[in-house]
Image (cartoon, rainbow, N blue to C red; front, side, top):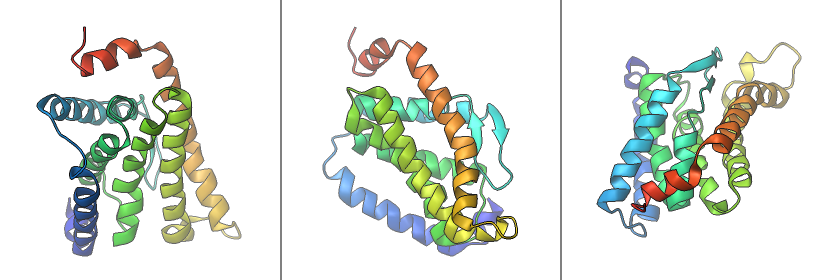
Length: 200
């Protein structure tokens, strides 16, 4: 939290994204009581699963016990809009729990935007693994850009920053993607999504 307070411009950048999010999504999304409850439930599950880290990278990024699965589920159930909103909320929580801030714009590319990208899974609701791949590709793109622009100094001497960012981010996002796909394979998805919809 102290890192956030020492970078107040990051707060203004996040506020700008929140206003944009409100303008683009909330006017076109109907938030029912059930939807809000499901968002809160999936958000809580994501936070809990993120605590079970199998591996944690030194400059941020973790392989977890499928922490992105709840965000994927909310996206599959309600579509990309609600998925992006839930991802944004999780990005804010994640930033408060584990901040690594070097620049206000970097905050956007490492916290709200990559988790908002998980909402892209909702574009392929009938093709779960393609939707999951699209979501992780969007998240990877955000972290990759951040790595090239803001973390180039961490690259070993003589190593191209783009290659460094590619290897660094793939080293934890690829295992995370595989774990999420395996969990989606074994979970009773129809029953879970039906329960979220209030169906029996």
